Length: 201
Image 1 (tube, rainbow, N blue to C red):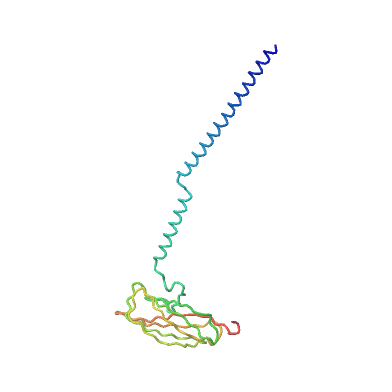
Image 2 (image 1 turned 30 degrees about the vertical axis):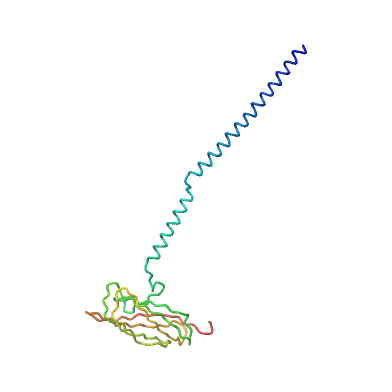
């Protein structure tokens, strides 16, 4: 009886040892599979193309192309200037723009930059200009000027200095005598400015 019980205990001990070996072997096998899986995933990620990086590079290239295209476009020197009003209705073969360089103040000289812009199809052999200040405005620079043949689409600048004598809306007229091979015509353009009292500066 005791011998039989000893044999069963011996077999149970062997079974436990065998089961332990199998369990440990299973853990090692699963760990090995997990490691192999991680290495495969890393290799796949390394070999796969990066979509976000490619998209970012494409966006950068597109932005650089847009900047290059903007840089190649010609700059209009009169883009930030205001159009003077033609008092005769039709502007004719030339347009006039202006920019007041400082806030007009009574008793203080202020410069006005005037741009003369011939149309693309204008054929002007000569331009005679006259600046005529309105009431409450004194002219400090030259009254008359002459220009030779103007190239179509080419902007010509003239600078004039005026001195406001009173507050309110003042006006400077630019009268242009335009001469071509076929006809001569006169156009007057009004340049408004608002003067303030020097006590408000």
